[in-house]
Length: 254
Length: 360
Image 1 (cartoon, rainbow over the protein chains, first blue to last red):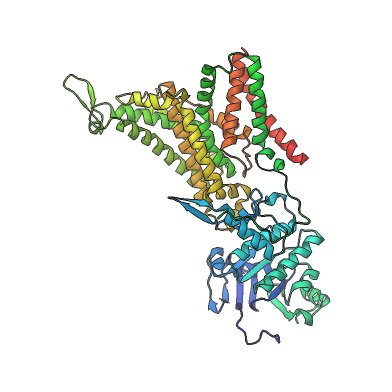
Image 2 (image 1 turned 90 degrees about the vertical axis):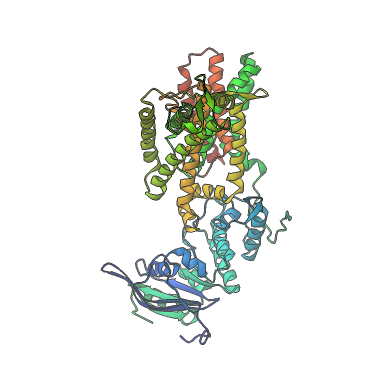
């Protein structure tokens, strides 16, 4: 891999990672590295092993073989919360937002800021709204902290979900099909959100079926097919045609 | 730290939601409250007796008899659950309370020697601080409710059973236990502390019925808990999107158990208060009250699909039901019509909400 990243310590390093479900081999001998501030596209057809790989990194599954290193240390996640504790956040396809709550409430869900009133800890609404507004400002999203998520556009919802990962200062954000079900204008917004994350030194793994999006924001693309990594190239050294060929199997490896 | 929100963002494309489209103005609770006010005015002109002090006290007392339980079940409904065991729970808690009270006041019952003894002239005399029997017996009733709530919560949150089926079973179990412990006869609060008990449950303070005071106090606490604590926020999140709640690390199992415990405790307390007004806890007390309680919550705007509800709505629902009942009595309508009318109102309230949310 002849990139400028040579010599730097990778943020995430997978070595020989494999996963079997009974007799089914979902993932076989995957080596992969992700560096800080890098946007990596993860592509592949349905059943190629993308989600299994993501779920291993996010702590949903434990790998059957191989080693996962994060920030230089070998890690063994038992639950998603373990992965979150070291700085790995996932933005799910359905975004995991509570529609009936405000943007600020969703950003702080499960980690609410509180103020002590004698023996009682009450929510600090002002501090949460102010911090949420700051985060939306960083992401340059026109989102009001007090608006209900129910009334928001797809792009705003993405901003809320991504702001949540910024709150915990995640080092690696994995985004599962963030542009699958939203309008063209909102796709632009999401891609610019990814740029914002990169600017702040966050590594992003973008799982997507949409070729233009991957080529617009990613530094590198990893192609999976039948549970194996078939390609791992800087985006400038490849083309949508080549990636399509790799995904479909018209081309075996690159 | 009330800093003004100095916006680093310009909102060129995003309109602000107007004040009348937000909060209570855009909620079912809002227009049911409006309907209630209209109804009160109509009642005032329809019957000269309606706004008399006696009738108002009566109305306040009557709706307080289901409103505390309605506050409790509102927690459960906000999380998207349901508790059908509240009626049975009311009866069972009341029964345990009055049985413990009579038991501790009878000198030859086990344990009673701590509380009472027989004086030389054959009268029962309090051996301890006056009121202690009352405190112990009310606690006994509430602990019973706590245990039932824990069992409900455990079955639903840990074992993953459906709330409807679990609490339907519990409705029957708790009612059955009530018949078992009392042999079907019910029980009566008795002994030296019974007077305190009646004063605290069916008495009044400056003309305001005691149950109404408890209701206002509990509703205020509930409003703070729901809107200003992390627990309250998690209750709403659970009803809005349970999967999201779980993914963001909210202790879903614990919150669920807690709401069923709160609901059972509220029902237990409600039952104890009602038994004070009745003067006894008959074994068939509060039968099918769960339907009134759920109806009141739903009319007041709690959404059975979860995510919406609050103390104001619970109270508005209860008041509306009671005013209609009271109105029908004053208008000398056959009281059998009440139940049919309540059903119509439930459907109307939900229907209007559906139409409104389609329009906006």
